[in-house]
Each structure stands twice: as structure tokens, then as C-alpha cells.
Amino acid sequence: MPYLGRVPAAVPVTADDIPNNSIDASKLVDGSITIADIADDAVTADKLANSINSAIAANTAKTGITSGQASAITANTAKVTNYNQTKTDIDALGIAASSITGALPAISGASLTGLTSSQMPTGSVLQVAHTNPGTGENYWTNSATWHSVGTIAITPNSTSNKVFLLASCPGVWLGANTSHTSFRIMRGATQVAYSRYICSNSYVSSSSWFVANLLMNHMDTPSTTSSTTYSMEIKTDATGAVYAPNGEGEFTITAMEVQG
Image (cartoon, rainbow, N blue to C red; front, side, top):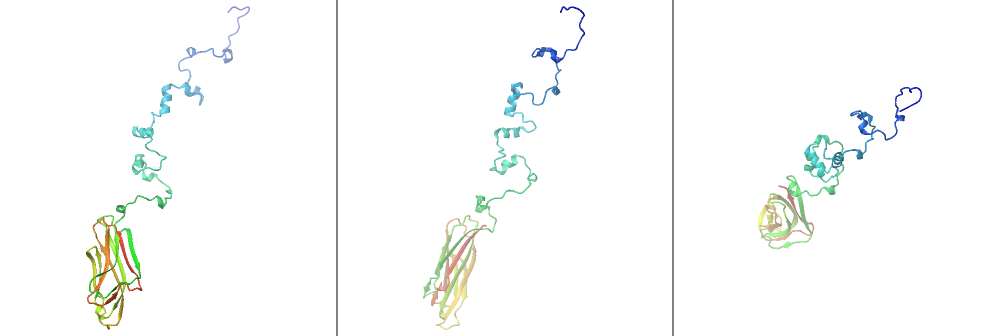
């Protein structure tokens, strides 16, 4: 550049001497700009390669986890925020029991459903059937034959389960001829429990009344899942007047299914 007079002294070029937008990438030395030269949060998504943006959006890298865990995240099969999971789902997350601490949330008894009779421990009472006809009288003048006092039906849940029976009947016997009273429980036409001479009226006059309460319990194995009927029956070894129930007390019979 031509000039008049003396040559001007050499002065360093400053940023103010460079017009805006006058230096392009071809004027920069390779590697002259380092990571430290880039301010935090200064690079936007527009300045990243499309492949990087796609990887971030799809999260296909998933650095630090296994391929199986990556698939679970992608498919959301873990459902970490879904509480309706099975034990298998929880085991798949790899959470050790020792890692779970703190108090568990309270569970309402109404939520404890789906427990079947087969899941109950041995000896559990699964169901109870009970009958109490009242205080009405049954009167027989010839009690040397078996007479049914009452019945009850129950349907077991399994052939291996048992039925525990409790029977009670108040009775009145008139005269010495009604001695040696017997008592039994029938399952259909099969006798399952029997007691003979449970009371005797042999040593009183023929005009005397004899009062007793007949009691019996028995653990039966019906080996069926069909409805099963049990009956309570009494008789004496001679003829005479018998009231059972006697009109003053109540006949009762209870059947309880017990897990076998």
C-alpha cells in the first residue's frame, strides 16, 4: 500500500482490527480449538451430527447395562412403576431381597383373594355346616329300632379331606323298659360312629322318667367331593316311650371340613 512519509511502526493485530464474519474455517489451524475453549451448554442439538441425535433419542447406546436389560428398557417389560407384577418380573430386575429395606405398605384384608382350599395347611378348617332344628319333640313308643333325630349335608373340597362331626341331643326315657340306649352317626347308609349303652334306665320303676343328653363326636373320611349327608340316630334295646329331642333342649349337629 503506498504511503507518504515514514513507514508506520509494526503493531500487533487485535480482535478489534478484524471485521466480523471475516475469518472462515480455512484460516484456522487444525486442533487450535480445544474442548476447554467451548463454553458449557454452548453446543445445541443443531450442531450435532444426525447420527448422534438419533442415538440419543432412541437411547440405543444404553452404556453400562447388558443387552438383555437394554431390550427390557426398550420394550418396557420391567415396568418399574407398575406394582401389579409377579415374582418372576421382580426377579428379572435382579433386586436382591437384602436390598429391600423399610416397612412394607399396609395390605387390606379385602385384597387377600385367590387363596384356595388346597393352599391351606393340614388341619385347617375349610368350611362349617351346622343345623339346629329347635326344641320340637320326637316321640316313639317302640324305640327298639333306629330313629333319625336330624341330618346335615356338607360338600368336601377334596377326597383327601376329613369331616369332623359334633352331635348333641337331649332325651327323655319313660319306664324301665327303655334301658340300654344306643346312639350312632350315619353317612348315607354307612354307620361311621356308634356308642352302645350310653344310658340305662334299668333300676327305676316303669313310671319313672329318665333324662340324659346324648353327645358324640367323630372324625370321618368320606373320600368324596360330592354332597354328603350325615344323620344322627338313636334306639333302645327294648320297647318304651322315648322323647328325643325332649322338647326342653335343642338337637344340634355340626360338620366341619378339615384339610387332610
